[in-house]
Image (tube, rainbow over all chains, first blue to last red; front, side, top):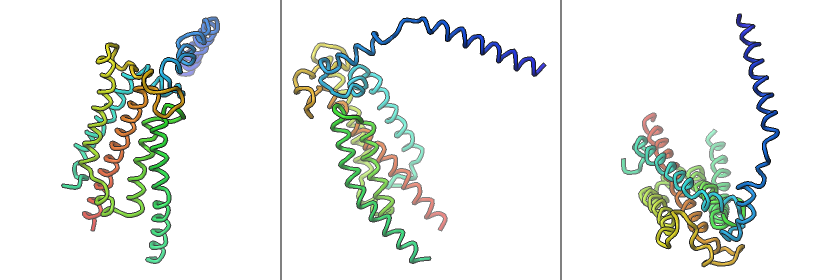
Length: 89
Length: 153
């Protein structure tokens, strides 16, 4: 029974994988989408040569704001837990 | 055995002396040129914060505690977080969206150091924040190590 279940699940995974591959192959290319617009117009929009920084700090400014506050929260919690390591204590 | 430890200390101290200025200069370069070359605030800040680790490795607890001011680092991190939020709010003051790059046309041509509007300033504030935050975290961990050594003795 265990052997049957193994082969059954492998067969299901294989068939599903082949089906997904076949259906994704006929999807339209995403090259002309947002990525191309971002890369082509980054210099005239933001005057930044590094497209990655332009995306991180301009197009996804919210994301970076949250990211930096994640770091801030982590460091504050570490300071609260590891209070022994501070100089005054 | 004692002599061996001393020789090791000299080597580590020399390496710390040699690499600390390089870490500071290279980290500040990576932060300030984040919009021109690969890198950015997070990466450059971590490189600068390596200077704290190098000072600790080369010179020990006392020098690290005397050289770095923990309260100043903590306050600087908070200030940098507020600075980022302020540059993000600049878009609202100019009549556009939150986080809009409103200074892009006012600062300089593409390729110059002071160009790309708020990207430069946000990059700088994130770099300053990561620098002070990771330095503060390293100082806390080193303080814990000292506490443990005193208890075991």
